[in-house]
Length: 420
Ligand SMILES: C[S@@+](CC[C@H](N)C(=O)[O-])C[C@H]1O[C@@H](n2cnc3c(N)ncnc32)[C@H](O)[C@@H]1O
Image 1 (cartoon, protein in one colour):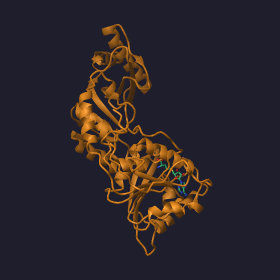
Image 2 (cartoon, rainbow, N blue to C red):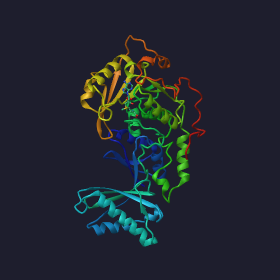
Image 3 (cartoon, rainbow, N blue to C red):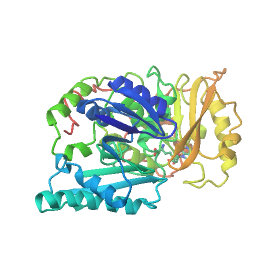
Image 4 (tube, rainbow, N blue to C red):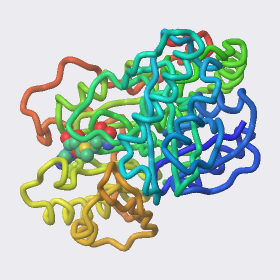
């Protein structure tokens, strides 16, 4: 089968390597993604294991048309009952370029839906309903000029919905983007990982999942292909068993901190839901007064005034620059920033500047090498005793516990948190 795999802008190289590793053939680049070929097992694998994909579409067929009637006939011809029963539901998305017959994609989607409904009516005397949320079959049509390609959406909802997020806070980063930040930082899982503005914990969770080889879809129950008539549970089980057998322990620390009690609570819920309560430590600290152990990989996305307002954004970023220089010595530091004026305020020389999008905000992922000076730093173990004066929230948090010990974590292979 031919597949089209989509990602976020800036993560293409990561996705290409991932597709190769998963065994995809004939990989070719398209805008924000790749086409490739393989069997059903590959399609299941990409959906279950890929950290950098947002959608996997299966190409069904292509045709040319001259009139709208012609278009409708071509849609009616396809054997849609290969995927669903007439009493089930459908949804259609359309993208149209350069075709005077279809000047809007809503109308195109409507016409495509009519063709599919006609197919079922003619064959069964029954028609599927239309449901935008969780339909049994979601179809995408792509029209360029008078040529149309029809796809079935194998993923269902976007693959950034990993299934572990139980709590949101103001501006969480997309899970696929967070996985991308971890990978683009070049972290080789050979040192501690630190997010000093962890918000709801997305970056530390994705870091832990990558370090421990936990498949991206481990906590996700729903995939579009599971609702189809031709779904093969046996193949999915094989894919899951083989990927899950690669889950391993991780011996360095993964630490998230934030100055807000409320936000830390939200992160804790997500970390707990991802089964990572023994693997990720959470601390409440102000980034400006936190000393991060030398040799750590530091990855974070500070507020940048678009989604979370800052009183003095320029001053805030200048202070962050000073903090990287003074409190993150001997660390590799990466920061996702969405406002060009603010990048400059950091005032440090970047070792890398990678263009990315955070939602629709054009951003830069900025890398800094913070050199080790003469100053000695406390280790993470001592942080919890020093948080007193720096706290954003005045009340002591009581709802969660910091952990610095590392108890036996061999629980994944036994499937304690497993959902099949
Ligand atoms: C853009 S959000 C991070 C989102 C996070 N990556 C996620 O996925 O949820 C920025 C975070 O920085 C935190 N923050 C702002 N100023 C801080 C400070 N001085 N020290 C520590 N955390 C701070 C905010 O509480 C907020 O949670």
